Length: 426
Image (cartoon, rainbow, N blue to C red; front, side):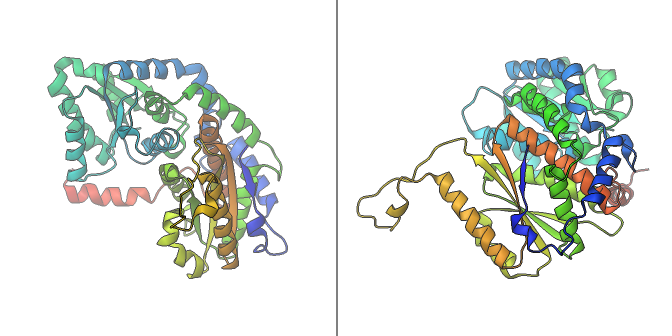
């Protein structure tokens, strides 16, 4: 399991400490599906369901895309793309499209209405063979729907009637605009499960098809997730999800209203974006909620480090570290030692990074910033599974302990109604 170390936060707890009785109640509510939004807790058993029902179809489609396409355009917004992009950047590379590989480039669109971004993607695709994976539960979300119009027209212009064999729709199982279009046009369909909300859907076809196209071993990922979900179902204060959720809630009650997630791996950036949506959309309602923010260390120590160290004391810090680096790189020796760094010669970059992380946490704790440490064995399919399952379960526990429904997002609809009115939708 993921390891949670609360040593850097315990001195900030009052005498009582985290209320694990409240977390225990939240655990039963979550795993029994008995609370508000309980009909959307299907993600707890999703890995085993995908293994038995949809895995082979996803793998077959990904093989077909890899064989006939140099590019896959993934169209979606929010939970419809963040999980897939997070996985690809974490396990493959943030520079995935720039490295030499035997898998297609992957472009994520439909999450912006920027003319510059859309036209640049069109130029980057150029004359290459490509396919589309459109991801939307309803098909009516404006940003991906408009993006789909653009790239579907481009696909149809290039391939004519054969374009339909290059469109893969991940949508509702039985109804909706995109479902109706997919059935009418004969596009291959994948399911966004009815009992799984978008931000919890990464281990469905929503996230798995793009991951598989990128060469991630999704079968290993799912098999690890089955075991991780089983372990996170443990009713115990030793459960790392209990520890994280309990610490978050206790610090929130002590006035720490902002959580800064930090990591020393640039490849973690979109994992953090996924985490921000997961916790922000699940907890931020009814006038309560911890504000989720992300800083990439050490780069942001030279821009936001001053604020964390000496700014308002309303924040706490959660640091995610990987115990084992995927690569080895040692600091070289230099004759003359003109930069004065030979005292580090022969040391591994990862070892130096870990020393820096300890020094930073120590300084921030002294600066009245509680620290929670989350450690994961390695950046691989097993580590990805542990992160996804841990954060999802922790989020459900934390939100229920806070007294809110983790699985709705009523505030999101507010801007949409005004947007459609201003655009002249009848």
